[in-house]
Length: 327
Image 1 (tube, rainbow, N blue to C red):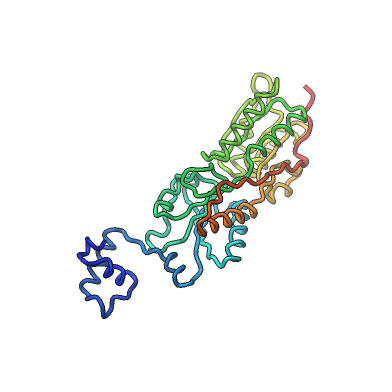
Image 2 (cartoon, rainbow, N blue to C red):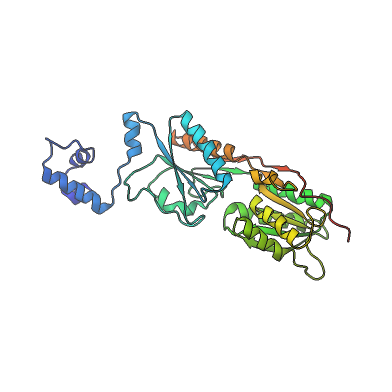
């Protein structure tokens, strides 16, 4: 920047810190500002805040602000941040797992680090290219992230699969979230492995849907259509919203849950106990995920390397699963 403006580094520093008056001519100060604009310079307000003793700020990125799970995650992150006098800015990535636009380009602001949930780290290229520490939640370990905090999604899916297999189910359908992210790919992989290991167990259909109740209804109606004289007796759903939609679809088709078809969910949202029968689902402590993620990010900011943290996920057995109907 000094070369572009034709001044010394000391002059650049004085102008960018707004200490140039009486020491640098107005013309040279304007030359530095013009060079900064041309080069797309963005002041590191976070570093400045640290020098001046002010609190830090981190950016929390989620795919959907209206989703209860992400609300819980955000609450946990904020709780930990407040303990360290760290400010939190919440940003919804409008493209979900796709590339996230940098919300601070036009504002000219900056943050100390980024905490992002349930998306690919590569989707945050714009946010992390400036050298900001990045901690990923519920995402593939490694890559651009300085640390990762995940649930044990593989174990959780095995719990669901074995629960249904132990009940005697052999004909399955997967109501899969129509989202290309690590967590959903992992669920599909483990489900397929578990069924392949049991003689006679089959995955009759994988029906994808947006994570919403109507999507669950449509996907389950497709999955429950008889195939070669048989239909699935168990629907494994990637989300509680999809599972509730699946229960609704079963009733529309004249099937009873769980007498004719068992249904499982994922996340253990409030909705899981608001329906009848209550959902058998995987409990994911979203608030703990956010809290552990924020602790990991603060550790990275202190120069530590927390690596990958794996949190347990537990199966909650309720009324939506039972033994399959007799042949």
